[in-house]
Length: 367
Length: 269
Image (tube, rainbow over all chains, first blue to last red; front, side, top):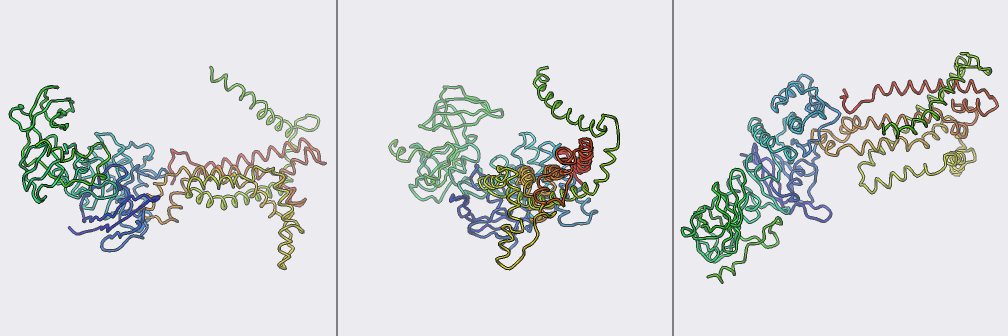
């Protein structure tokens, strides 16, 4: 796959506040890339730079090998699906979709053909004459997608397009969007704060926080091999513990040594350790390396979420079997499920809730 | 029941101060001095058709000039930050805080043969030009006095246009000029229509402006009506007849214009 868009060392500040802090990103032809992060992480700003609505303070934006920093939106071969759709209220469904084609002065016959194609693509045949004010949120969304796709852009930018829809509709649209992208074979750049959405649809996920890219990778990579505590916490729930990498494939957590599969962290290096809640199995206390007391049990539909107090740490465990509150249980996990990450600088710890796990000194005392 | 009770004072007000006067105008228009029914006065209005045409013409010109000045101004205004918008709006409204007569007198001293503008022109060897007592001066007076009534409705409609809609237009290939033409203008039409109404209606019936800035030669309908009630030509019946015809003309023009107006629900094109 060839590289279509390159962001090189992009910096953007508003009112002295750095929104994007030296962003480097390559986007390939025909891929579905998702920019994922909490609000204020700079994902929408990144999208707007590609769309041409923001000019970066420094750095270059390259499209198809040409620098396009100063190119206004109307000259770019990318189209946007806006967060709140931004349909033209004075035009009906047909004219909204035809808008870009009319601006291009295409012949009426071609316009009609393309609008019909688009209506079929998004499943709105028969809605041509409908006023956009009389459409549901999901239908407005489809018109916005059809309108952006009608002029056959090379890249479609989507800014949290499903944010205003209810859960069921959102899931349907996720599948629909993926289908459209594969059918048209164009690049989708998708912005969302919903990690599940990102994992469902993307070829690659770009996790952002504080104006910086934290990690770029396939959904599986991002989920299974988060590079730091932020990514681990943002992509699904995690147990993030402080540990000490004794040597390759051996890590010490809470004074106990565990086999793991990671290498290359050096010897006696403080690290963060991630263990996913669904990777932990509950067993009898005597059969496990770690034992603790069940603090709470919450029914989540598919599984139970349990908080288990063990070694001064509150472990989150997901299981289809509920343990009794207050009972003693043992926790086990296999080496493959222990993910080792470099420690994050303290000031970069995510704001939302997780404290830096306890310092390694504690573990040494426990020895 | 309660709602009706609350509405009662307003209803009474409307009957006393709107309905009754209208009926009286109608009554006087169709009767003579002795109270007998006659169509003479309404028929006589025809002889003033020249004045009607001039009034409509000048009011139209003033309305169009107001629109030409106000439209870009409103468009520039909505692009400014909120504070600047507030300041600019206040400047627009500022002349309205001063008395209408005073403002018009001021123009007399500016435009006169020995007025400020001619004096300035003479110092650089030009003029004097006859500016006061011309149709141009009347139009200027109308534009100056009624411009805020064009700017405000335009601004209030345009400020509500979602910025992301303008971005969507740019995204779909519109340069700023095309965005203006294809999106901003159609969305601002309700403001255009109410602005036109707010300027045209007072402009067509004005009498002070034409008297002060137009001299005796540029009589407008407003002056004509005033003369029938207060002037030497005292003739209440004729005055009522002229008023009635003017009302019908304005109503007709508004109806025609409303044909172009659109509800939110109806699609343009």
